[in-house]
Image: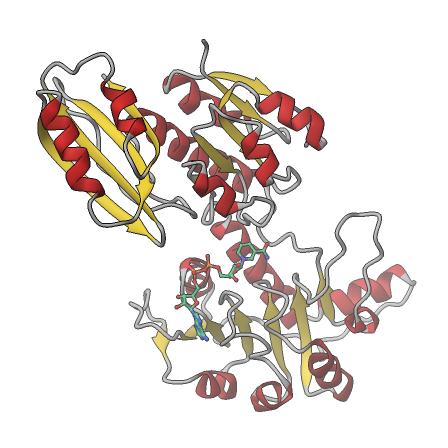
Length: 402
Ligand code: NAI
């Protein structure tokens, strides 16, 4: 039977090559499918690729008995029942970093536009008003950019901003190596008090929710700018609106909101709509063709590595293991199993009973799931894989022969 990777939602064509190299035929669907059609399309799939609109429920995994792995060619995995996937021994991969550069570029562009008062002047020009003045217009050179969260995006932004002559300061809860001349500050409060522009690049966590509330915004310098292109619950929008209303803040750029429309048919409403010195964008910080290509490359490569040597590095729902390429003369046994004492010794007994030798072995666990890769030498009996599958605790097992 042909091994097929079924790709939905018009994924970037760059995804095909690694999948074909891993021995897959690629079947493409232009959009997301409704459950009945989706389940039919998954009936024979070895791999599946989706974006955010395909709902991978427990029923979808039940309908895909041959599915080895699922790739989410996007950042989020909320559209997938991750526990159901794990209980079928199906790793789920995503592409969390492919759009890093896209967000960093948008942030930098927002800094420049806001420091020049462009959104307001552009709106006025559309109405026929000619706001030709330098009032509140600044070069970014020599200004202080305060980055909250110096991870992938924050640090990339730091490099780009330094190139434009901004002085970069950052605050992160983890120790981070500063790029170029960027300087780490000891607390969020310190950062808020010194920066001309504060930009948020932290995840949504209980500790970051509403981190920019009335008190935090009040600490920002009068006439400064706030940018949130990270997550919608980091900023108290009413507090931001009040600070714009009072003139304490000169402007803002917001790409993410506490409540975002589910589709383009739903109206978008925020108290920030009335401010012309605010750049409002519909959660497109990471949405570029280049990001889609980078994500296509990244996720397809992860799926291919899982097919060819069982690597689960980057999976969001199963133990992460990267046993590397399989050496010549070896066969790799892969088993997802219940994380309970005794499984490994039973597995090793089964290998001994088959007359094979374990040349290398790798094990990782995550919650209730264990994942083992064992490289075996010596001829294996024809029913060896069936014996492993029948073992107490085995969830899903396969052999890779090179
Ligand atoms: P990352 O995980 O690489 O970096 C986040 C950094 O924030 C880490 O260094 C972490 O130590 C730090 N951090 C966590 N809690 C903190 C706190 N309380 N104070 C200061 N620092 C803290 O994440 P990445 O890839 O840089 O993404 C950053 C944000 O951007 C995420 O929220 C992500 O969801 C969002 N994002 C938004 C997109 C959009 O379309 N607007 C697209 C891509 C990412």
